[in-house]
Length: 156
Image (cartoon, rainbow, N blue to C red):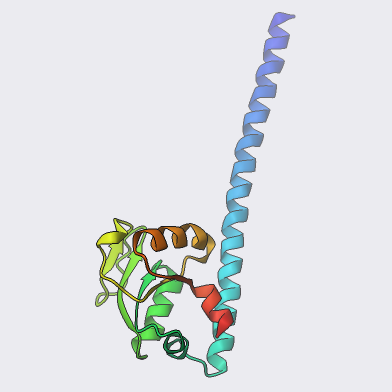
């Protein structure tokens, strides 16, 4: 009888552990899918803005921003940098948590002490999925505005 109870308890424990692992994997997949969907919607908005003939430089000029840093050099950050190359906004450097080196002519700093970085008018955060967390850190350590790429595109 004790042996049967022990076997059933172990089977129940194993099933619970497998269910827990599967739930964690599903949560991870949901978060990743939500992130990709949000980025896809953002690229769609970017396309609408571009088709309307609006430019980032016009937005930054209106806000009296001449020099920026880009936070997040994934796909969004790379596209923003490419877009701003031909406009009259200076991208001083980029900040990337992984220290991605994507643009040979742009200095990319890893997520180190932000207080040590050169002063810019604003930091544009392309990592929209963690904007609030990044914004708090940038405004505290760099004492400059942290602007969400998502908010910029919807304001343009």
